[in-house]
Length: 112
Ligand SMILES: C[S@@+](CC[C@H](N)C(=O)[O-])C[C@H]1O[C@@H](n2cnc3c(N)ncnc32)[C@H](O)[C@@H]1O
Image (cartoon, rainbow, N blue to C red):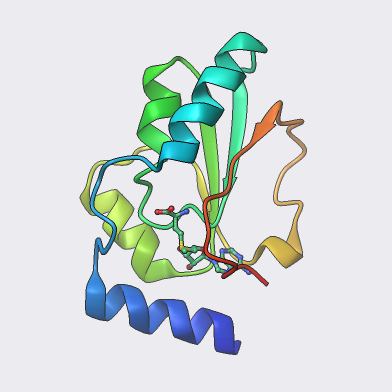
C-alpha cells in the first residue's frame, strides 16, 4: 500500500465522517455551473465517504466516484450512497470509458 493510501485509511478509521455531511461550498457552486451547462455525468475523484455527491445526484446528475480508501467507501455505503465508486488511485485512471461532462474534486492538496 502506498503512503497516501495508508494515510487515508488510518484517517478515515480514526476520524470516520470527519467533515460531516454538508456539501462543500465549492460543490454547491459546481452543481449550479453543471446545471447551467446541462451536464449529466459527473466524476468525483477522491470522493471520500461521499458528502459532496448528494447535491449532484439530487440535481439529476449521474455521479461516479474514485476513492483510494476502502474505509471511506465503506462509510459511504453505510450512509446509503448507492452510486458506482471505483476503489483505486486516480493515477490509475481510467476505470471506465465514460466521457464525463463534469469533474468535481474537493481536496486539500491531498491527491497525488
Ligand atoms: C481531503 S479528502 C476529501 C474527501 C471528499 N472529496 C470531501 O470533500 O469530503 C481527499 C480524499 O481523496 C482521497 N484520495 C487521496 N489520494 C487519492 C488518490 N490518489 N486516488 C483516489 N483517491 C485519493 C482520500 O482518501 C480522501 O477521501
